Image 1: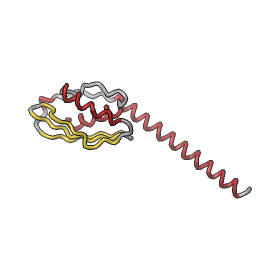
Image 2: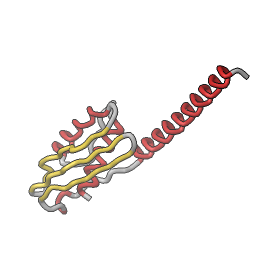
Image 3: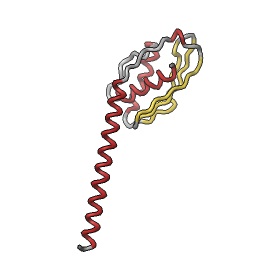
Image 4: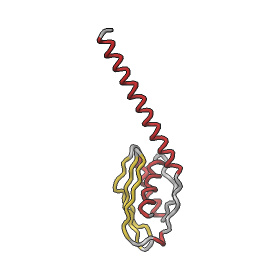
Length: 129
């Protein structure tokens, strides 16, 4: 067999292996994201939370969120996203306005950024739990 054909066969095998691995990774990410969407987020009883600054985080590949939540007189006075690793979910960050207005985690997810919205809520829940 000519050397050129051997090289071509090796290249084809490498491309196939990369393709299969990529498909497996994408399938796992999709399953993980679907599982995140099934997580129920119970609202937080703010009357039981003392004044202070609380840190929380949540990660589900490819999204990671870290938050700093400030409570004053049993009211959420500030939520700062200190880290938000995401693809197209930056628009989800406006969910903070809804949480502050409602003083609740029981708010609608942001359309077009549902996964990031959910992970932001889970990070805030982590901070206040």
